[in-house]
Length: 387
Image 1 (cartoon, rainbow, N blue to C red):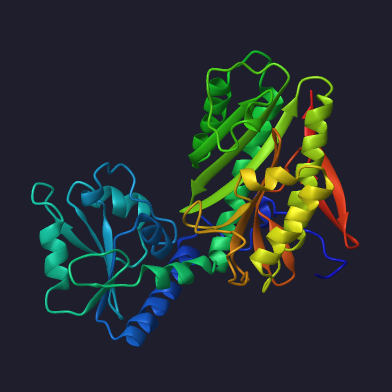
Image 2 (image 1 turned 180 degrees about the vertical axis):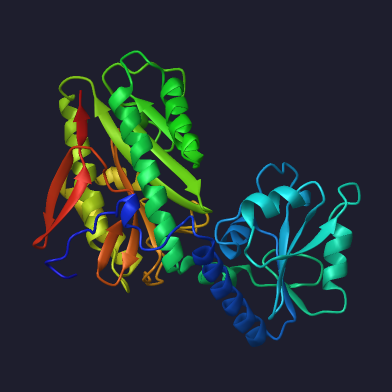
């Protein structure tokens, strides 16, 4: 690790290099992925690619979403040849998809009538062709793992999307943390978080609100009717532009409980160590072993075993779970979410792995910061907000 490197803060919305509201920028991203698919089809000797998984639909449409469809067997799909691309959908969904999700992105249409189901159309698309698919379908060659490796490599357009999503996630957590009141329930706070996310176009995927040490017993919790009296730990995973970001913030009413303060400081040290190690070609197993030593040094050795420590994220909340058995090197342009958990405390944010060091996608917007030095470099982690 470069000893002088620091975590790069996320950019403000006005500083994004690529416009998320300019169709040509998004269209260029889609066209780039068309080239990738054409090269892949040539490599595997197939005529076409059938795309059924929602995460791949979002990836190949640069953020399109198959919203409002409750039946998995009626979900819109995509079909790619080397030269063209099609949306395959029910007549019920066509207008909305082309108005709201893929307008101007160069997709053609193949449509089924809702009462006939999509199976006849998918069968017709594959008839007489050698077709690959991301999920098992008929006699298609399944290449989901290869597509995952392609989608993990985030493009410049996706970097901009991640920064915008990170701002939304940080704002929702911090605005909620500054306004909640003693006596409100975990459910009420979760509702406030969800409202702020949805208001800005992000969808809550996972929300945890843990009051007064409840997360000490439940490292992967949700929210209950429990009232908040002394402190709360808020964690959220949200999706927008088809991408997922995870972060947390912690709030105390009055001076923090000494045990919670100790746990929070330890969690920050562990997460800072993880972030400091998040460079291209780093070995996840070695990063986790290093983090385990920090757990030991802070007197929380057992906590390492109680909760997953981090994931490669992206189009799915968990693209790859990082464990001591994972030997694949971290790659530039991957997104990574670290989640250090000590007692009832959590220190969690999402980062982009870049050639010049980890870049915080969910950096604190207006929040107390804890500065931690590791091998001469300074890393910042969100501290406790004391109200």
